[in-house]
Length: 403
Ligand code: GUN
Ligand code: ZN
Image (cartoon, rainbow, N blue to C red; front, side, top):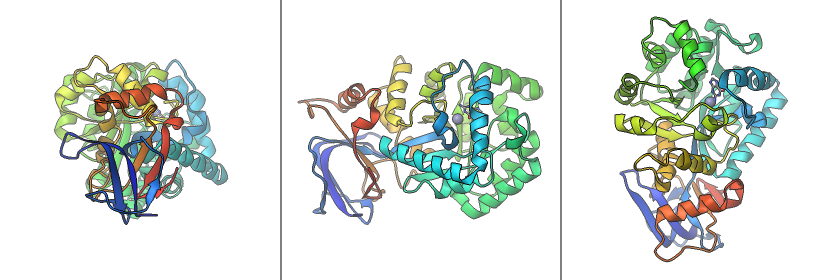
């Protein structure tokens, strides 16, 4: 049913700023797109008292880490070597890859995630798995590139990596994301080659930046002439409005200004940062500099695919930052995510003409008299902490019910 109607309390960021908050209202859609006014389409769900929010959007998640998610470890680099790379190596096997892709897709749908910027494994074929096997979730992403300091079975030559990136770029265009893992595992030659591909196309770029102090020190050792870790990506031509950098915890003011000037996105992943003891991303400095931020689970460092879990952790971790409140968390987990992945004109809000991607959340006891949107959202996050899937009554993508 791509035309339909649902009743509930409508809560959404607006693309022009501010909030849409309409208690006891309805949404309707036709041909998969939201309509202006509540139409007379067939009732899609009869459960009463639901909180209707845009489909949640994960701006940073690793599909091949799904089965090993939440293996808490003291630090990034040993965790990668001991838990992550051995698992990613299994993705050269097609049946394994397809089985995990199906589990991962089902996990996202159960969590209310309707769009995501996804990382594959360091294998050429993985780009196809990411971009073809996760429907109906709206996915952008690609295969990971590494050409140094990584296990032989996950390392491609610089030439092979660049050839495959160029092929995927012409095959998938704006759906594809060039995905160099991070500076320690990517040569300057590889990064610069990717910068040239990015400059001549409309692909996205996604990578990691300054998550952990040992990682930052390693980059300084590998690139003594660079001003900073960010500078290595900058010199390679990899910054810009279609680039999403995960973590960005250890940056100075020059870096933050450069991110703002180039309109580069940060994917802030608070649950992952807790799990790996990476530290707190300095949100107050990031916002003051005018850098754009979306939220990500970073599964498998993040233990859960639920963006509700990420929103709750964000609110906890960044509580002291002025302006941080539940409706900001919702905006970063919907509209900002859509913008970061190049879907900002089509998704991320409940506004007419946009894809009818929405999540109906349960609101225990219904709406209370005079309750504000921040109070309502806080209550949902509180009530379902640790059992996030129970919060999700239904999920629609393009007006089709998927959960
Ligand atoms: N840095 C380089 N690779 C990774 C990864 O897979 N996960 C996280 N959290 N950080 C990384
Ligand atoms: Zn990551």
